[in-house]
Amino acid sequence: VLKAYAGLCHAELVEALPQVEMAANDVRNRDLGDQYSLAEASMGLYYMLILLTRNEALNIVVNAGVGEGLLAWRRLVQRYDSGAATRLAGLLLHLMNWSFAGDIQSRLELFERELVRYELRATEQISLNLHIGMVLNGLEKGALKDHLLLNGARYATWQAFKQEIVEYRRATQVVHDTGHAVAMDV
Picture: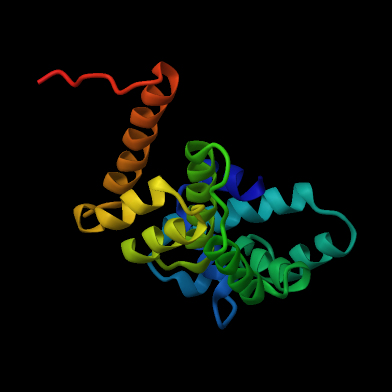
């Protein structure tokens, strides 16, 4: 929640926070060079953290130095989320074993949300083929999975793949609801 609020207050932090979390070295405001808006965002983050932390976490923020929000954030992550790389691997494994049983559209939306979360934290984009492969891996055996496999060459984008699932679901719902296929308008 804090990351979302910080990103709302300072758009630069949306990309900066995940990068700082995974950085090999500390990031101080003086190291930001001519990135004045990021330095300003770092200062804003510092004051947010001052207001929201207590006890040891507050000491970590204060010890980072006045206005050093990015550094304080990195040190808080190191202290309280030290297995960040392990968590990324776990999140990726979770995505690879995602179940699409039940309402496929809602499961697909949730999958996509978790995928975006992974990509933001890992600062890497998962390829279209892996996106599709993860979905196919998580689908139960059946007509939808067969249809998607047989028509795999048609999906040039993630959106096209998702749209195919939506259209397939609608078509099968019509057949299911009416008990027979409905003629198409030509």
